[in-house]
Image 1: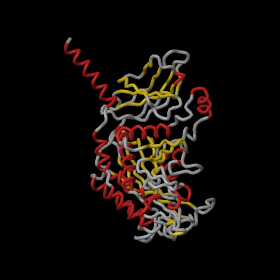
Image 2: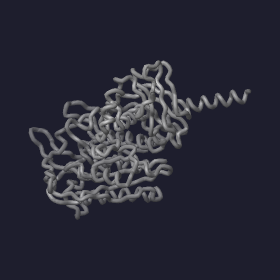
Image 3: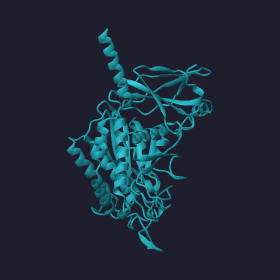
Image 4: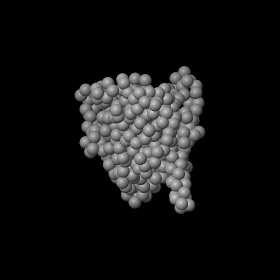
Length: 445
């Protein structure tokens, strides 16, 4: 009898630990991100003069060709240091002037890709991207200096630094670190890689698009090294008419796969980096604009944009000059490297959590219509030791309530009425890492 009681207590304490713990490896990852390495990489990228997509590809010191070769060489060095753990290659697509108003001449748009294969789920990928290219005031001008220190050497340097840190670890899921090109001319690099992923039947956990992560002084006068934005669209762009109609009756207008990814980032930052203020923006991107996560969203993949909260438009898409006492241009002097380090860490811990987590349940059923309690049932997940049910008020942006239910695949939430909350389920690994929450996708009657 005493042994049974002890066993029961151990099971209870184990469940409590899984449901509430943090993992010291995540703090190690945060501490390993280097401000100095990010500074050096941003400076090197800016010193290529211009990285316009259609700039020089032959020179070893100037233009997009020199920049992408240097990025690849850095990924190759990292791979050597981690016993060839990265598969580094160019992925490219040809773009032409025809039908493209921002393309001055036909050219190859070349992405630099580094894949760190997972040990258990090699075909499941979490992607971090930065943009290689830069631009001057005139996007068709591919010869004028356009150092692009913040837009977007900061995102590219952050991606490279995340690769340096995370390549020291082994993960069950795969991670891709990529420098995308052609962003300023029409999101060509993202579109090319998204199609490549679709053709290869990759299972994309999500893409973290980093575009401008180095400025803390806003044109509005606000200065903050803690605020940052996570842009995400509410529902998939390719949802079916049946799914759209169902939302009228069951809800989910802000619960698409990209929005769940945004909530995942928000939760992990609040857990491991509480000094930061992640701002979830309920929009694909800035007003009327788009970033390199959009082509992935267009094909039904989850994806978000991480960027600074307070922009300075005098330092974006501007020729270097001084007018009326204002210094225009995207130069290294305007970048806050400590802030870029923090946002790089945000990406690194998000990818680590996801890469160590089991897959999400594919099916989550919900019931409890005209009953006193909500009921949930979900498909089992290989590698999960348990599951966590989340729920929130329908007006809340975050999952505010949760219950770890152990290794079962159905649960009734007594006294919680289905009409008054939204619900979701995540799979949990033995060391506490969680999948992205899945919003119910089937109804139980």
